[in-house]
Amino acid sequence: MNPYKVLRGPEGFLPPAAALAGNILPEEGQGHLEGQIVSEEQAIEESARKFASAKVPTIFPGPLVLWGWNEKALRTAEAVERLSVAGGINIIPMPDYRPKYPKIDPEAEINPNHPNLTIWHNKIDVCMFIGVHCHYANLSLKIIRGGTSCFTMAFCAHAGHEDANLTVRDMSPDKVDKVTAILKKLKTNSKGF
Image (cartoon, rainbow, N blue to C red; front, side, top):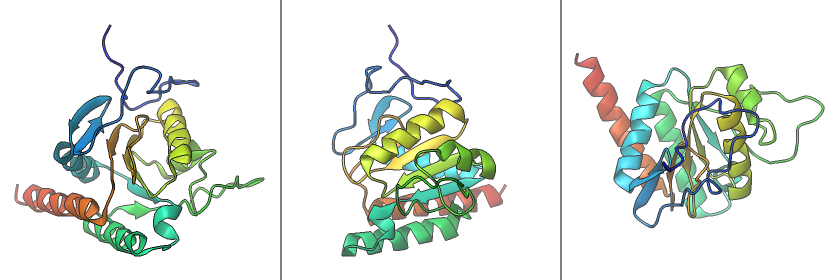
């Protein structure tokens, strides 16, 4: 039996949880790319490539970045801003997880209970979750994979997310800055042709 690949969707109304399909989380120094364990450097490089080739690249920062609750959160927020500016990447915040009923405004923020609406409304083809609590990230990533064709990336402060198309664990401002540096090189090289 071939290993389950975490590919872009839409995969259907009830996509399988990647963990139940046999996917494992990366160890320190590793990343996860479409269900396969890769080096962390390879995952970071691929995330920059995905942003460089995207039509509507978007970063979804969560409370662990937005709330500025410690020095690392503040530095990560600054790194996310540098990445956004360098790559022309949209930022749509996920400041809290309460359902936004009765109306969801997909232009203002992403709702983890209905992230597909934000993806569809904004025609997002590549996105990055960063600073989103793990249980909400996994829920949102599975919904996005099930109903959209968006390529999802998760830069996680802990062990990573098997339901993302690409994940980097032990997120830090330095890792975000690596994505920015690679993205700048890719954009500079593409202008030379």
